[in-house]
Amino acid sequence: MRITDVDVVVTCPGRNFVTVRITTDEGVTGVGDATLNGRELAVASYLRDHLAAQLVGRDPLRTDDTWHYLYRGAYWRRGPVTMTAIAGVDTALWDIKGKVAGLPVYQLLGGRARDGVTVYGHASGDTVEAAVEDAARFLDEGYRAVRVQSAIPGLESTYGIGGVSTAGTHAYEPADAAVPTENVWDTEAYLDHTPRLFEAVRRELGPLPRLLHDVHHRLTPNEAARLGKELEPFHLTWLEDPVPAELQDGYRHLRQHTTTPIATGEVFSSIYDCELLIRERLIDYIRTTVVHAGGITHLRRIFDLAALYDVRSGSHGATDLSPVCLAAALHVDTAIPNFGLQEYMQHTPETDAVFPHSYHFEDGMLHVGEEPGLGVDIDLEKAAEYPYQPASLPVNRLRDGTMFHW
Ligand code: EZ4
Ligand code: CO
Image (tube, rainbow, N blue to C red; front, side, top):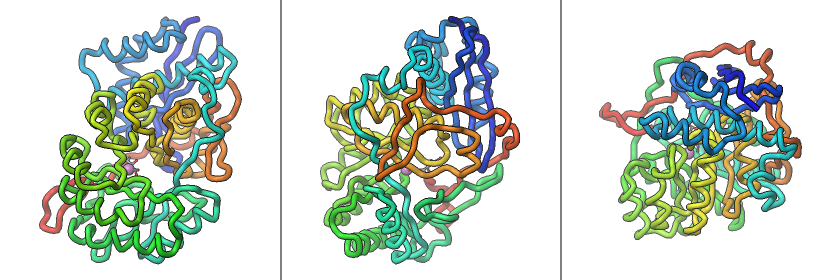
C-alpha cells in the first residue's frame, strides 16, 4: 500500500481550518487536523511545499516510522508550526490504519477504557450573575463539569466572554481580520474579581459540580499562588494556565503555595515542553492535544509519561480545533488509563456540516462512533464554499500601553 496524494484543504466555515487528506493507491483515504489558530497558512505551506512530496510513495501503515521521518528528518525540531503539520499527517495515517484494520482507532490504542469521555463546557457572562446562570444551564443540559469565566469590572473586554456563550451554542470567535484587536488587561482588577466569581458560583450551584477556570497565561508565579490560595475554598477541578507556560520553574513556587489543582499545556507542542512539569508533579492535568502536540503518536507518548506520575489528561478542545482533531482526541481519551477531562465547545452548524462525524454528546459525555478509523471526514464540496479569511487572535496591553500576554 502506498500514499498517492497528500492534499491540504483550507476552509473557513465560521473560522479557518486546515485539513490534511491522504489518499492511497488502494483507495483508502484518511484525514487529519492541522489548524494553528491565526497561523493557518504557515502550516498549510509546510505541508504542501515541504512534506507532501516526501510522503508520496511511502507505506501509510508505517505510522511511527513516518512520525520520526518527519520529526528527525527536519533537523529543525519541535515548534507549533512543525508539530501541527506532523500532527495532521500522523492523524490521517491513524485514520487510514483504522479503516484498513476495520476498527475504530481507539481499538488500536488498546481498546475501550471507559464508557464515554467526560467533557466540560464553557460558561461565561458579562456579570457574575450571568456567569452563574450560564453555568447552571450547562448543568441542566447534563454537563458534569463547567469552566466559568466572567467579565472583569472596569475592563472593556475579557478573555472568554463575548459572542453567544450559552449552553447549546458555541462561544466567542476571534477577530475576523489579519490585524489583531487590542484588549486592555489589569491584573489587580482580575485578582480582586475572580475569587468573588467563584464564591458566587459555589453559593448558587452547591459543592458538587466540577468547576474550572482559565487564567490564560497572565499571572506571575506569585500572583498565581495568591489566586490559587484564595480559590481553595471553592474546590476547583483545575486552574488553567496560571502563568505563561515557558516559565516552567515558576510552577514550583505555585505548587508550594496552593493545593488548587493546576492544568497547563494547550500551547505545548512536544513531550519536552512538559517533561519537567510532569516528572516533578507540578501539574495535575496535561492539556496537550492531538493537533498541536504531534498527532496521536506523540500525544500518546506524553500521556503515557504523565500516567507514571499521576498526571491526568485534560486535552484542549476549543472551537479552533476542528472536528477532525476532536474525533481523534476522543479516540485517545477513550483508550488511555489516565484520562482526566476533555474540553468541549460546540462547533457551528456550518463547521459540523463541512466535517461530518459520528461522535455525539449524551449525559455530559462525548462518545466516539464505532466505524473504522476516526469516524470523521471532510466534505470537499462544502469546504470549497468557505474560502480562507484572514483572522487573528487578539493581543493584550496593560493600561499604560505595555504589550502583555493574551
Ligand atoms: O485561547 O484555543 O482553553 N481554551 C483556550 C482557548 C484558546 C484558543 C487559542 O486558539 O484557552 O480559548
Ligand atoms: Co485555555
